[in-house]
Structures are given as C-alpha cells and as structure tokens.
Image: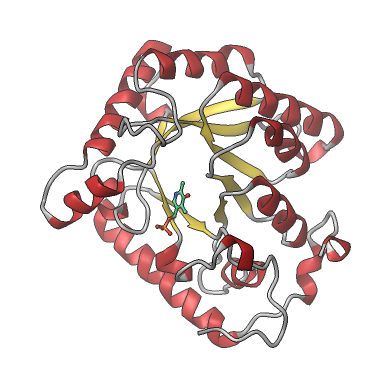
Length: 282
Ligand SMILES: *Cc1c(COP(=O)(O)O)cnc(C)c1O
C-alpha cells in the first residue's frame, strides 16, 4: 500500500467511502458526543475516536463528515499510525495511545508531523527518543516549528503486573520532571491510565467509584504540586467505551472511545489499512 501513500495525505482523494457505513459511523459518533455532553455538564472533554485496526475509509468518513468533522483519532501501533497518517489529510490530529516500543519512538515523532499527542510515555528513554524525533522534525519542517509535541505520562493505577505505566509514586514524579527539564521539544500535557477492566465494570454497575480514576486524579494533583503548576495545566486522560461516563464524572478531560463508534475490531492479522471499493460491511 505504501506506493499509494504520499507526504501530503493526498492518497485520501481517491479513497472510497461507503455512504451507509458513513451514516452509521456518524450516528454512532454523535451518540457518543451526546453522552459526553450529559456526563460533563458542559465542561469541555476531548473525544479521541480510537480507530486502531479500522480502515482509513472509516477515519476519512468521520473526518469529512459535514455535520461534525472529527479531528482527534487514536491508534495503538506506531507503524499503523504512520501509514495511515501518510494516506489521510494533515488536518487530522493523531494520538498514539498504545504501548510504545522505545525504538519506534523517534521515527514516529519524526515522520508524523500532525502527531498531536503521545499518551503512553512510561520511561525516560522513550521520552528522550520522542524528543530526538521531534527535534529532527522541527529542523526540517517549518509548519511544526515552535510547536511542542504533547505527551502524557501513563500511570499504572491498578498495580497489575502486566499493565504498562509508571508507579503512581516517586516514579511518576521523576519522569514528569525529566520531561519538563530535559525534553525541550515535548510538552507534558498530563497523565493517562487504562485501569483495570474489573474495576470499571464494578463501577459502572454499582454506583461505586472507580479507584483507578481516583488514583489518577490524586497523582495528577501531586505532580502539579511538585512541579509548582496549576492542576488545570495537567489533563487527565481516562475512560474508554465501557466507562467513559464514569471517567468524566471523576474529572476526565479526554476519553478514548473505539468500539462504541466503530464496532468490534478485527484480529490484528485480518486488519486492513484501507478497504477496497467492494468491501462488505456487516
Ligand atoms: C483500544 C483502546 C481504547 C478504546 O477501547 P474501546 O473499548 O474500544 O473503546 C482506549 N484506550 C486505549 C489505550 C486502547 O488501547
């Protein structure tokens, strides 16, 4: 597919959009916006449409929707994000939300000029590699000059061994200070958690409070204090399809919603970057 890619995202001009699919996606998206609106009481909450493993046609359909063009899209794999970004308009704001490999950080930051945020920074090495990539991009691209790459520090609020993220104690402080002090091309925009599925399910059935969300908010407050900045300068990114309303109720500034907008995802091996014209949707 890379032969159809070009640096300006003009590959999108020939991309097929199925009108029925576009209508369904648009309805799903506005339903999510309505739910955000009622949960947030008018507070501004960013919606990232999580398009991982979904074709560029779906993304273009929502981005060019005349009633409500969606700007923010989230991806989990650096390679997939990079390929999609080369095929789609530069007006999209990309979020890298998935587990990051250190060696993918520099190319990602260097090759995707409209990368808006990396949400999953959990080591100083990854921050340094993103810093290098953004510095290289800045040197070669006038459009990004002077704009920093936003990053969030991912926090392991649930204490699960297999979850990525720094511990919500000294580790988070050190990484946040490192980004502030040693990464001039990065902007520490906040903190992010995925949280334990079990907890979010418990919290959404009972009127219970999700401990991961409480923990992230407390972590944010402590980091802000330690850095000597206002809490509002650090955003909270928490909440997905199953729990975004609960997350908003607990102060989330940004929710990442995939399945509720795009439907179930295919297996990674079956995912296509771009859907051909006669593809059937179920
Ligand atoms: C996939 C993913 C999401 C979206 O999950 P859904 O349940 O499909 O809404 C949100 N955040 C992260 C980090 C993800 O990997």
